[in-house]
Amino acid sequence: MMRKTSQPTLQGITSNQTKIRITSIFVIVVGFYLFTSIKTESSLLDLWNGKNGFINIAQNLFPPNWNYASTVLPQLIETLHMAIIATTIAAIISIPISLLSAANLFPNAFIHQPVRFIMNVLRTIPDILLALIFVGIFGVGVFPGIMALIIFSLGLLAKLVYETIESIDMNPIEAIRASGGNTLQVIGYAVLPQVLPQFVSFGLYVFEVNVRASLVLGFVGAGGIGLLLNQQVSWANYPNVMTIIIIIFVSVVIIDYISNKLRERLI
Amino acid sequence: MIEFKDISLVYPNGTQGLKNVNIQINPGEFVVVVGLSGAGKSTLIRSINRLVTPTHGELLIDQENILNYRARDLRKLRTKVGMIFQNYNLVKRSSVMKNVISGRLGYTGTLRSLFNLYPKEDMALAYRSLERVNISEKLYQRSDQLSGGQQQRVAIARVLTQQPNIILADEPVASLDPPTSHQVMTYLRKVNKEDHITTIVNLHFIDMAMEYADRIIGMRAGEVVYDGPVSEVCEATFEEIYGRKIRDEDRVGGSDDA
Image (cartoon, rainbow over all chains, first blue to last red; front, side):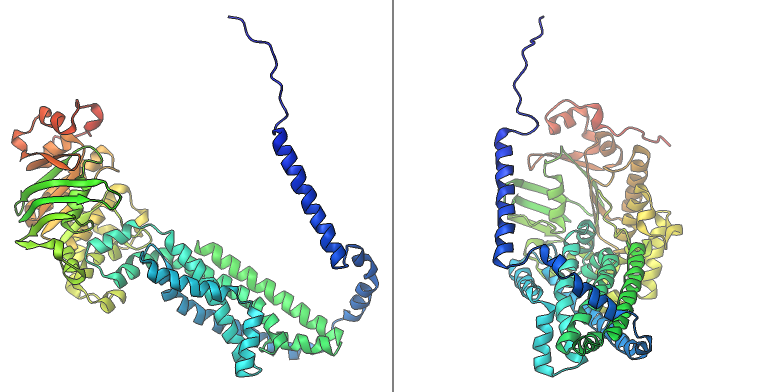
């Protein structure tokens, strides 16, 4: 049999239609960037124009004032305390909430949907806004900061945990149910053992997030090291600011490192 | 005694799981239910502990219609009906002991069970159950470190710890190799004889059904198409139940003629 020798006419790897679509999307996106840049009167050139500012700040920040460290450390510890307390309380509250949000345990939409909805609403509130609200209610101090962190991390933790619960192996649950276990026993014997490692891991992760979040909360008067940072920046005391920045940086790196190592071991 | 009286089951998606089933299973019998996959074997045995609920008819266990049972009654029923699954269904991250003691959940208060406060007799019973299936040396190992056959034996021990009147086994050997399958079936048979526990097993291997059953129930498309003592069953019976010729894959082989 003769082989056909005629070459099909190809348009390359992608069809012409696709090429046109990709090109027009590219043009629109670039156009949008240009438009926003012009509208907000900011461009990459500002980076160059501001070079003196960079130099000024850098000169002012160095050398850091190490004598100030003794004032910073107690505040750092206060920040850590806030994060620990908030994470622990949020973790405890998140257990029943995430169980109720899991559709595989509570298939009735009237149970899991409202719980999820409340958690979704909580998650959309920025942490700084929560802090402002609680400072408004309780006054300046550590307590409103802790409250803000609890609410903030609860939304996060509950979502992470309920998604884990929904991915567990349902077979042991069927077995416990078939042997006459009630709902709480099913949870205790078949659900918790399966999610415990991830739960602890998420707890550590949320603790990391809380340490970083609690820095920002200080700016609105919700206690911790952020309060100090805000104060020193507004007094333009740059060597002190640099001390705070270095201490924060080092401690955050150490905490993230330890918590990452622990989490690797867990899973 | 278990009595199916004109039982039918239609799943919410419209599939007919069971169709006019009328059978009686006597105390202490070892019944094997055979049929192709999708024939309704699982649905039949899962009706007995109400993991599924028939939509029509009456299902009597010791003269009581279990189809009316709700929450508390249902848990009491399930406490007395042990179940063994194809995938063992152990909690893999928990120890063997924790899995076996969970057979006592129906007898134990919620708080006691959540804090592992079991009476001494229950612990001893769990240990004896493990001894009966020759796996007590694995007591504190994590269940996922055990082989398939060992996990299924732990599952049998869990059921024994329930001290049930009825054992249901849904394709208990479908994930096991032939020698291990025979071992598991031998344990089920032994328990059935020693404790006089009514045992209902789903199988699709015909040689295994012939070897271990007292009585065979054949199912096709949700209906019981054969019911009789194993002595009256021959290859033609299976061909009738399956609606086709018997093939090699319908036999597990490797029977130990010890």
